[in-house]
Image (cartoon, rainbow, N blue to C red):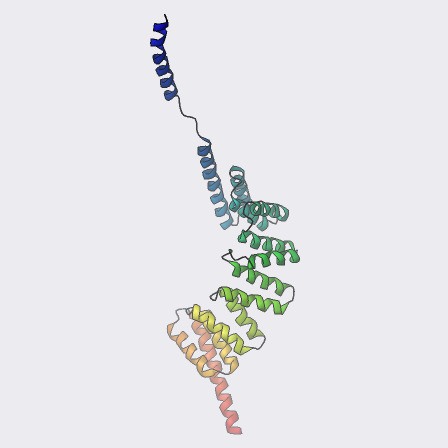
Length: 272
């Protein structure tokens, strides 16, 4: 009897092994996590598309699904906060940004977004604090935007010196920063500081030489400075090369103004 039992044991073990192998494998926790991550990314992309369409209700719904499926991705919380900000749900935006920072404390984009949030909320003191944090964060690649945002906020607050200083800091970090270059050029031109304005117009046109609208604007500045020869040279080039009839018409008009001014100057010289 004992011998029979011994002979049967290996068969029983083999039978059990074959049963185990034939069972369908259970999904691992890692597989479940990957599925959740893929689903979260799907809804995140839907939210980004909705933001591009300015459909903030749809964006909020999809970003909310994304964070439910994967609450450990700080970008999803950031995106949700931005959607809430645009939709004027300021308290909810603040909470979403807080979740993002809890996961990634040095998240420069969120520092910047909090500055935008508090600006829209009308809480300028807090906005300044967050923009300053973003501008001082070396790991934030777009920190020049934070300096530009600081400039706009100081302008709103009537602090002209700080406004100019932060525009210049933005340009220091990104010398081809279109908006800041053009804003400084126009600011100095409006104040009658034509030589300073010319510096920034030239820097702008050096980076963006094909911008005919700003080239025309620069020619107008030269006319105000009395630099007619340089202005006419620029205007002639515009007339010869531009495919925009409005630009050409404005260039012709400015040339005629210069010719009239020069004729008046010659008459004055003769009278004297």
